[in-house]
Amino acid sequence: MWAIRAAGLVGLLLAASQGLCPVSRPAILPDTVLRSVGVNVTLPCLQGELGINGPVCWKLETQAASSECVSPAGPGSSLLLRLVQYNDSGRYSCYVGGCLVRSLRLVVEEPPEAPHFSCYRRSHVKDVLCEWQPRRKPSPRTRAVLWVKKWLTGENATEQRCRYFSKAEKFTCRITVPPSDDDTFLLVSVSVSSGAGSVASQDQVISANRILKPDPPVSVLVDPVESAPQKLQVNWTYPPSWDPHFYRLHFQVRYRAERSQSYTEIDRVRETSLVIHDAWRGTRHVVQVRGLEEFGHGSWSEWSQEAAGTPWTDPSDLEAETGLYSCQFPLDYEFYGDQFTYPPEPYGSSTEGADGEGQPDGSRSTVPPYTFLIAGGSLLLGTGLLAAIVVRYKKKWRRHSLGRGKASMVAQHPLVPLVPPSPTSPTSDAPLLSPPASPGSGDFGLYDITNLDYLLIPQQLGSPPHRPALQQQPQPGCE
Image 1: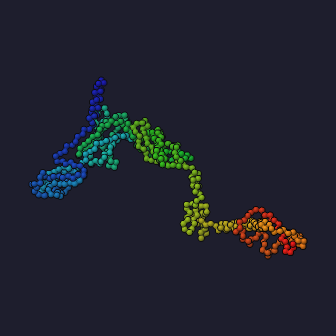
Image 2 (image 1 turned 45 degrees about the vertical axis):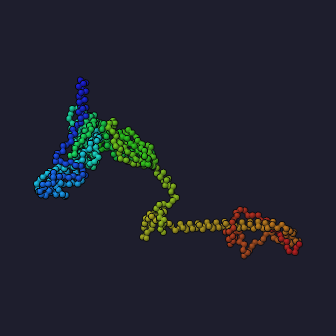
Image 3 (image 1 turned 90 degrees about the vertical axis):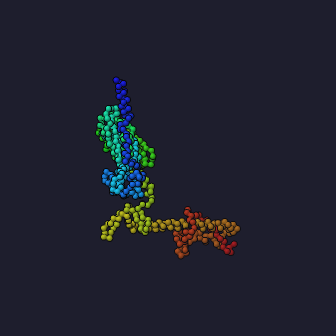
């Protein structure tokens, strides 16, 4: 029994190794000329140029219509086509004297490329898609077919036509798989053919469960968290191709500061939201999300589009930062021109118009005149007080300087004899204190404001100096 099963298994493997689709190169008919794109082609009318009686013309007959009769541009009856393209393909007929002499079929094709395809499935309820992208654009007559059958069964392979999408520049083949056959293994192969030949791919064994690849999540949003300068709230939704009612995804989130190059990743996120707890303060962050089937079947989706957000910032911190520049002038001051424009607040918000109605003016306000009067009066009062103090201490300093000057003169002349006073001139006759000066004598007492020497002589503040008693000079003739 085991021998029979082993023989059957070997037979199936041999059948699979032989390929699902036979590859055969189409035979080129004797009247067919195969050329590649961008080369020059010469179509002969006769084997030899002798025996041509009458004018020679060529006609191109395609599936759409026939062209007018065209005579060869050079000598002879051969037709020269320069740098042929795909639309030059068709049947060319040569007429001599109005009679058909020869007909040739020109095929402008590129040999097809061997397809290197891969298959994936967006969800458990979607079809399997097999895709590949050729290195160059295929010709319009290129045909691609996918062959598929269940592996290790006696069923025949079925054919699925593939389509080429010009915008995406790739071939796409579709395989319908019921949800109950998720664990079934399929044998898949692709063949590509054109007028220049055909080629087939290697067979692949795929499982509908193992080729699951969801689309990336959508609507990724990054928002700040109130009163949390290091947190970010991230929200996203399932892709439209995945129905979360029966099958779910788990997600992976990666984020980085905008000025950083390395990502931080968070795995096994079950919900469609996440709070980041270690964001940089006041820095913009970039976040991406991708998904995987909840039981780990298949592969991760591509990363979603980038979403950006900045953590919450305390308004008081912003005011503290801007307060560093509070000593500077506001930016809306105008220093150019003859007029000085004040900011709207706090200088004023309205002016009185000619008709008596208040006219709001947010860019210019008038300073009241009494402001200048108060400032000027305060300046004059302060100046007067300062002058009175300076004059008072200047008078005291002057008297102190005169006393010290006379004492020094006496000390410098020690040879002058000190003669006692004469009996005829008792010291009691000379008053010890000088009489008060009259108003017209020029001495104005303590506040002598007519003498301006205080502006030139440095003042010396302090208590009044002690006056030494003046020595009585001897009178002439009283020795």
